[in-house]
Image (cartoon, rainbow, N blue to C red):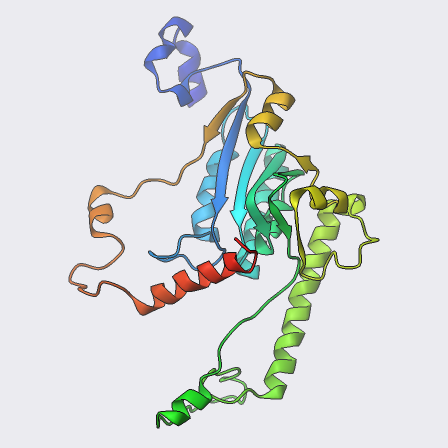
Length: 294
């Protein structure tokens, strides 16, 4: 028997015995999904967003019975273009399948891939001090070839395929590699621009030349540019929309088993305190926020 049928059989005067999320109520309900952190690989020292972790939250949010809308609280400096696009498409798929509107609320930032995800919403609201935009593509690396020469290290790389070691940071930069990289970036940028245009449509202020330059703006400016629909926070906007009795249902990630939490993500017997890859990931996360001045 369906859960809703079981609830209907329980007298209203006894529903206080149930957890709040299972009680029937005449108050409007809005599920809330928080999307925070850089977008891409998630590691112990680097929290963030990836399709594998976000998809279950979205499915639960869009499955809440009687939901008036799904709210996305976004706080991200961006990251992987592919992961951003996958999350965007999954949000739109659920919204169209369930016929439920989506409203996004920007906290510190919805920049680059974070803004791409925000565009999955039917409406976007920001704080006056939020950072919004950065519609562009960036690749960053380092060049170590002079350093390894100075300390007497010889780099040996053997490939099948002339481009397999493209942009190797331990070799001098090859101009042909840079040209190819820029070509890839332009294709990804075109996808981003087309997505923003398709979602924001006539709301965009096309008279501003830097709209798709990778620049970013504060919330008040973003309203004038048509990147967001207005200023406000989730509580004030949704109470004005659905009334003072609107209930927010936070959709939280499932808690890991106790043993997994005690051991962390490391395998038993791993005595290393820090993984160098995780440290680099944490530094990259810090750099992503720093690019926005945050």
